[in-house]
Every structure is written in structure tokens, then in C-alpha cells.
Length: 136
Image (cartoon, rainbow, N blue to C red; front, side, top):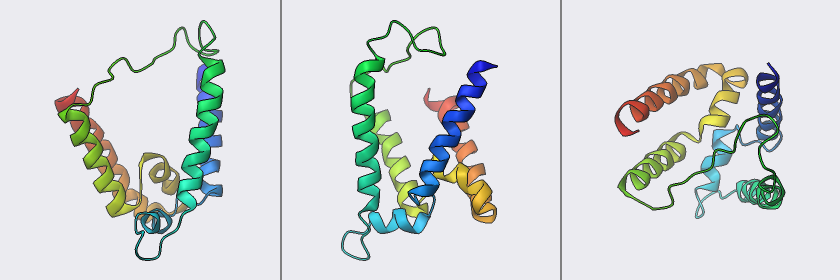
């Protein structure tokens, strides 16, 4: 129960950050991806802030013997770039660029803009299922 509560709190903080930074607005994301048109640099600041916080805090977190709410750390062990990684990243990027949604904002938009998100969410679930079934 404690882990579920921690996950819920973290999800709410993440969702609030997406709403405050307006990253749930697909037009804002698409404008970031249009440097020669109506370019909006705010996404770069949001991403830069996230990278800065992660870089700073992960140094201290990984000094612990184990996480606060889990038995062990789950870190990526694969460090090579292969065709599956390039294909997955390409598909993600194409979908993100076309729709302006990635999974976090898409899920938050299920509450804010349900008509649009209800097209995105089934595609997210189906894509995740295909990835697990055929690519894992």
C-alpha cells in the first residue's frame, strides 16, 4: 500500500508539472518542433530543468544501498545502440511530432481534453502491447 501511495503522489506531482509547464498542450509541443515557423523554446527549458534536477539528485540517490520504497534499484544494463532502439525511438519521435503527445501528457489529457485523448490512449495501449509481444 505504501508503494501505491508513493507512486500516486509522484504521478500527481509529475502531472501537475506537465499542466503548469503547459506540456499537455500538443500545439506547444508541435511549435517546439517547428524551428523555422512558430517556434516555442519553452519545452527546451522544461527538459533542461528536468535533466538538471535528475543529474543533481541521482548522484545522491545512487549512493544509497537501496531505494526507499523498493528492494533494489532497477537500472538499465544495456548500453549499446542497436536497430531495435533506433526503430523504437524513431516511432516514438514520429508519433510525438505528429500528435504533440507522449505518454505522460496523453494520460493527463484524458482528464483535461477527453475527446482528443480517447483517440491517443487506445493507440498507446495497443502500441505498448505490440512492443511487449513482438519486441521484448
